[in-house]
Image (cartoon, rainbow, N blue to C red; front, side, top):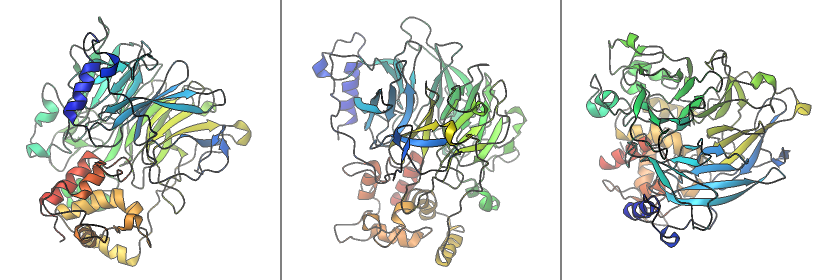
Length: 555
């Protein structure tokens, strides 16, 4: 793996102020196709000429497979000529990301071409007023011409620097949106560097949230001058833990934010243990300049967080809509196409990325004339739970295409999907949501889970937040457990023992106090295919490392 210094040097050459580097000094893109991910969809029939996924949708709506074999696709945008541009994070390890161009063919399919490589965690992507592509990494935003020729890869120009999302940040990714009414005004998510300001011992005020350059905020950059480069920023809004979904309403100019709310509320208030799967709710917020939306002091409709009892939440803005808990809205867009029925037009399409029972679906949120949520959520795609023949889905970004279809990136299985509508097959009426699917537990699992719910410490956190959330879906099904490793639901003692014991094919996956243990390398994709596909989140990795640093206890 190339060192971060080497990659930074290569990018600095490309980004040089005068573009003085010759083309042979720029790092060449990888020419091989990315490795396929572990899970693969079993398609059946076609959807608008694409392989059709067997998912539950409104009558007349279908989901087609545009592309597979990607590593960790996140942001997607469409260029004026109809081609698609995609940011593939490559996982959570350093400098594994890439950018891909999908050239639209006459038959509705797309030919893919990698145009940038060795980029650190590219996530947010947008087409600017100049029709150039803007990409957000943890550290900066750069732009480039995807059709530039005569070089191994296009020249990049730094537009925004010092985005506070460097290596080790809890929420390092950035989503961004250009204001359609004021095209050179750019709004960027700056995620929090903690869950609940725990690094400051739950101080009030929390310096991270309240300083001049806060985390948990949305920054506004004015790019209207000169070469359209940022020279500073203003804080558009505070108290927003992680705004990975941002969308402007095309008519009113309303900026709507999708909030990824806090984790593990029951750790601070055990009385909420039975409600932890629903609390706190995720949120949709109407962004008002200078407003404070409550993080970390308040959640839901002005309820004081357990860490800040008695906090006066009356001065903070309450959400426009509460979403189900832990759905993780990572992408959304107002529907302005003509392909789908009139009931869709103007309403909000949201991808629920979350792996828990409320997540892994795509929904429609009715809105009023200003774009403010105003009605009951309806399902557009569901039935994405893992089965014996199909993987679980994890939708990320949402893009309304020029033809009115809806593109969705899906990072758990490395795919781009396309929702299409055929009036001859049904009326397309969005679906009334069903109660979330609760996994069936054996009696043995129930005993283990009841015991785990009473435990604290690094091992219990590892089991609840990492193994059950990200590993059990693949490694919990026997016989013939994936990779020969059994990781069972709520089995904290058994799983810790299996991770620490020697294997027939080698040593243990985890050695106490060794942060270079093979498990860590596999989670990072360092010398091994990354597991799970795309790796785990920074906060989950922090819990893995905390357990290892504590001696990898088995009790």
